[in-house]
Length: 52
Image 1 (tube, rainbow, N blue to C red):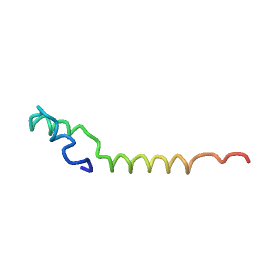
Image 2: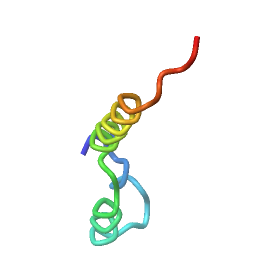
Image 3: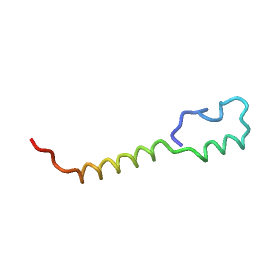
């Protein structure tokens, strides 16, 4: 998922079910980065030019 090894599995006391639940509710970092880049590109493309 693009997370460092042990990000969830090395947390003491979490059962496998809890680990899967935590990962299932997470955002994949690469996907979040791509989404933000797309939104920024769209925003920049539609921005009004500034006066010089």
